[in-house]
Image (cartoon, rainbow, N blue to C red; front, top):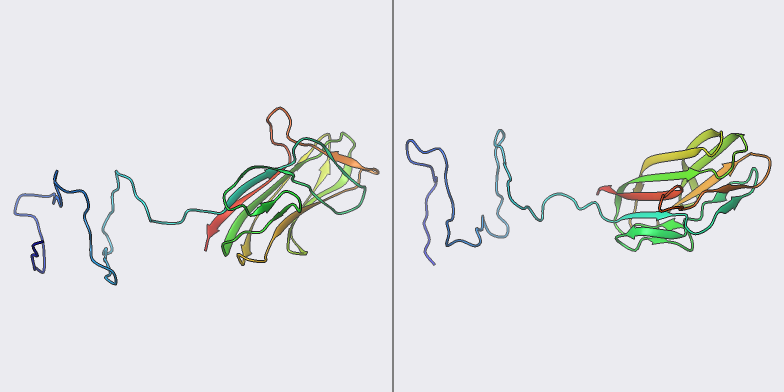
Length: 198
């Protein structure tokens, strides 16, 4: 292998584009372990190819939903929403028996909980709460007017080991009320989230 030692590589006068590598090149290495490749302010990186190893992968991510049957929520009782099926779960972090999302990577997560009421009985208060561990973290309160969908979205800092997310619902229709489940391949009551930053 040959080595060229110079301080600056530049194009010749009248040429604006520098080509490194040609038809005989399969890999171009910049620097070695421990080096810093500096890109000065004002420089634009234009990528028309495939990039790997850059940025963040936003994993783990998951989408869980209420499948196969309705869930009955008692009147005036804060109750865990039982998301008992999954569409995807990249890190196997959601448990369909405990209804908990316990991410295995520390960071900030975007979480969205959507619950569709399965009753036409009006109610002055239908609350969807996102719990972090045993404490309520985020609450959305709406009236139920003929099968209302209640959406609660937030960002939560998780430690990547013991912190978990659960969703609870409160309703005061005056009696037990059902929540809708996956019907005709339409997700109506679901919980989803993904890592947004470490």
